[in-house]
Length: 344
Image 1: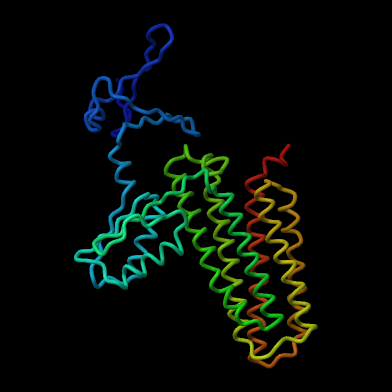
Image 2 (image 1 turned 180 degrees about the vertical axis):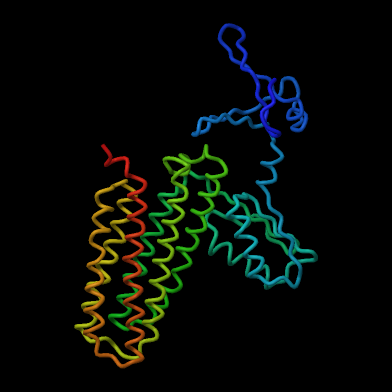
């Protein structure tokens, strides 16, 4: 046996039985994992070419399967929620909320409401004043990254359209509905982030969650953030609809509606170029994005609003432009992911 580095060993491959290659396992590793003659281990062939040896009932895996969050009576609910989200994103499948004494009625109510509203695939399996146990039940093939991301895109696009409709009709309930819908996008954002972190920790899961390779993880993390921010700007449009004191004149609204329609179309097309791995469509979106600037200028110039409403209108127009910019950002990532398709 040759020594390589302090934390590595080099072992020689041996040939036995006329058809089998074998290597010996380090004694310390066998003892540490409580293995013995006849014990079964699992071998995983990784995408990178590495071979991973996994002992049964791995202590590390047990630790990752269960997170325990201790809660004191004075803990703020938002602080508890942040710990729950961190555990969820880290990949824990079971999250135990254990109070030092007992959960207050407010803590218990708020935590349950938060989990049901924000954590995809998570159920409350134990609900008492002495503990809450959350279990992530959704398996990866049931909701892949592409499926979750497509759902995020549909919701964000619908939010934007509804916000513009609220602007046209001064529909206050519709604008408020757009604001409340943002939670739907945020919960899928958390779910996809959890999947990506899991894939980085376990590259063998890459294809199971819907990616072609682990190299896609960073690209998809940036894309889901762009989608989440596009939804945030739909919320900002709705909030500014509520802030407007007067209705827009038809000429100004028509220009805003045209600008919005173009931005949403580019946003949707950028996502389709991602799902289809379409380099040419993504490139065309980037080339055409400057058309938004001309429409933005026209909308601002045509406005006949007073100073206060004029400032609100500029914020609405800026949010529409930012949505188009996110389409461009997504398209640039698609170019990076698919550049091999256009190389000779």
